[in-house]
Length: 193
Image (cartoon, rainbow, N blue to C red; front, side, top):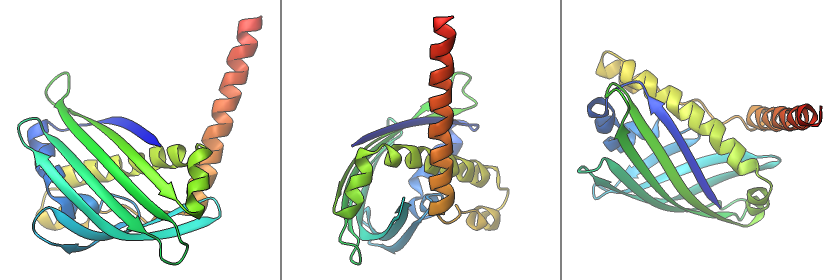
């Protein structure tokens, strides 16, 4: 499945790029993610915990991160296994940072290709993964903004994303789907009048 998201950070690219290159610090903004080892060569061990509907998974795995300073882009390849539930996942992510319209902001685009296998794969077909990813990106952006607004290194280090709360994410996702359905219904009814 492919997921694309974009957002704008209210700081210029010269302020945002160093944070995106600081993988251990940026990982703190990924809800449910934890780095467990930095091998120093762009390879990291970590854990990502997710909850989709009734399925909870904790993926242990590796990720390789490469940077291109010339065009402010990041490429991430990762794979992980949920040893308790039998699910597996692979991800390839491209992140591109560009100057915003005024130069005072940074536009960030994310393109991810996610492959899931095992029990968790059934949720990739329902659209739930896409909705949950939008919610997680929103939490990520809030955390990034807070880190960029922090005034001291201690304040920056103290900012992190909260835990992934499967029930609240599931309810928020269902609520978003319900609102979208009502909007579609309302727009269709308006067109018939």
